Length: 362
Image 1 (cartoon, rainbow, N blue to C red):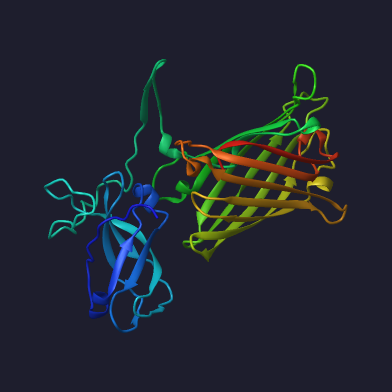
Image 2: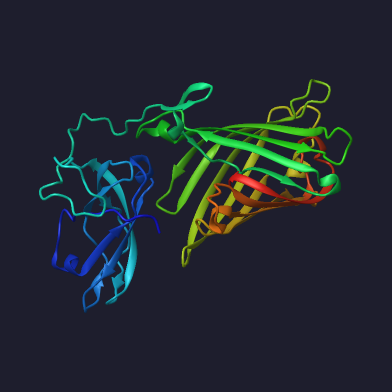
């Protein structure tokens, strides 16, 4: 569990005296906007309704002090010595104390007033990195992982499969545009078994979509994705799809969770020399993920076309090497594929490949 932040209930009732609220410390205000998990522990001798305090204060890892408010949820009963999880979201800034806060120490008395209302809800600036080639800058807090970034290697014609991917949030704020994302994924196939080791297939995939939270355990996405092999008119495959997807997470206990992601899409426009791509890719997929943070993650995605009987499935497996010691910030990564359309250029060919390598994101 991540470091726990100190807190002060801003309201109390007799039942709250029995419940101790322990929040997970968010990394920043933006991280807190996704919701902060708070553990409500019954330290009394009698069962009590798990309402918890309506508001609490928390100090994020970057020093931002926030007022959190409990999200509406069905009220459970907590047995003596038991606990439940609640979800809180930030509603205001907490006043900064006149003396520096000590991590883990109680906040000074009287803290709780919000900053003036004209303070912007989110203030982010560029990040500068001084390196041997000079200073580089970027709005790094706007970037996030998207599809896995990895390099995996197999035997014989499996060769190597390399992928680079990121998502970028162009707008910063609490409005509707804050949900907008631009993403880019590039997948390359490297035939190490052939002379000179050529890159035989490359797929370029930009996306524009909105990612909309649905409570604290689900998210809905809708947008457009383009997949291209980057070739000229004679051999160009340019696929454009409008898609909708939703992810729902389920708590499996002991830190494990499962995620189910159904996705459907509609092909639009011309597809170059691949007018029958939908007969191999189909119009829907289903992904299942089982994972534990800082531990094993398994993900399998299946797609296909029931009318043509052409299907495909891909498996990702990853484990953080940092858990094995040595301070590695990468993952041991395995990837396997079977079916049609692993590469856009050869979508009519059926393949089965397994590869092992490393990943930077998963």
